[in-house]
Image 1 (cartoon, rainbow, N blue to C red):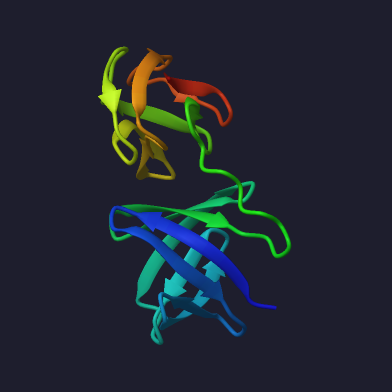
Image 2 (image 1 turned 60 degrees about the vertical axis):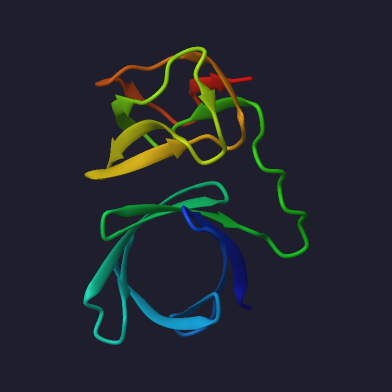
Length: 155
């Protein structure tokens, strides 16, 4: 059964359907895919483009050509979870903090990059999920962080 997911990037939300036989439809455009190793997805008929995928719960991160994309899986029959609002932001997977872009008191807007992490030799931006003000920052460059541990508190 095809699975529908929502992908968010700097241009907005995109509807993605994972169909049978390695075909993915993104906003109406069909892409041929195949896997060759855990976490590795080959794109196109010839498999020349490679994407790396990491997962935590219903969220996937796809690293492709220097860009990171966050994908939320929508389970059939379940209501879509509310977008994370005010509160804490944490690492999606074990990672190293590369840069912290904000400090307490910084006013942020949905989509602003707050922290840059490195995992699997790729940079992963942690972005504000809503507008707010940074209440606290609990990490610094070089820190090793784990999923579920608050990095930034927003109010």
